[in-house]
Image (cartoon, rainbow over all chains, first blue to last red):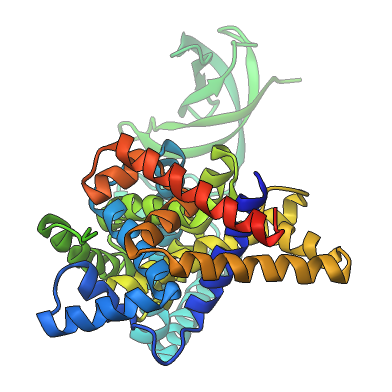
Length: 242
Length: 193
């Protein structure tokens, strides 16, 4: 950069600053643009050219504007940096918009569309139902009768209200019930009263047919003819009788 | 020299304002189309900074981010000239911030001004006098030569000037060379060189 270049640079800088604060006589941007585009009538054109002959600042502005318009009209290929920047901006905006949209929907649903008293009523209802269920579970109406009278199916006690029981008898048979790698077996037990218990038990059998055993279990149902009931259930613990 | 724009460029210039309105409305396709004018105007605004290409692209990307983040909505003008001035101001401000951040010592106008400001008083007067003398010399030129000088001073290449004026690049190159020689001679007689 030689001396002329430096002086020229300063001159351009000064003229650019004057462009920001044009004098009263200088051409306005709209007029200058109209002249650059050939959109002024002949008298105006003569007036503009007469001014440009005298005003270096306006010539500078005109040269700059004409170059800008030329560049806009015949652009070069957009740089990848700008394209990537815009792609990031657009994708970032979408990421922001989605949660904003969801949050807005929720806000409208709960704040504007559902009255507060309705929310309070629903909450109170949930509390009442929860309290009622818990109260009934903890304090059953009456102990379950045992053994169940199976002649009337309606008398079957719901499983949750049955108390675990222990029965004893002699093992009459054992059948393997392993399924899908879960080891289990079904054991048939003959009680001294003549009743039969068919019980599901997990794991490998620990007793054999003919053994006297005691079984803790939950009994969920029964079938059988009169006098010889057959109870069904799940053995939770099984041991040999002493 | 009558180098006003041909008709095809008038329509493109008019479309620019419509494009800006669409960008302000958040149209992604409009923003993609906006990259071309931004790049063209931005590069012209950055010419006087004489920055490396990579730095110029970073500044344009930075300006794009600022415009996308809401800066473009600040534009309220109604002419292409106003929009070009707006866009150049955005890019120049980014460039000034960049140059200040980089703290480079030479090659940028602001640094040159600052450097001159640190010099002694007599040198500053001399520099100002020479700039004023150069202004008077340029003002005395024929309008055609004035425009050539200013286009060259703004960093335009001979090929670009030739396209704009419709004359052969070789003619433009020799005309500019003669013009600059004349100015150098005048500055030398004045004691500025």
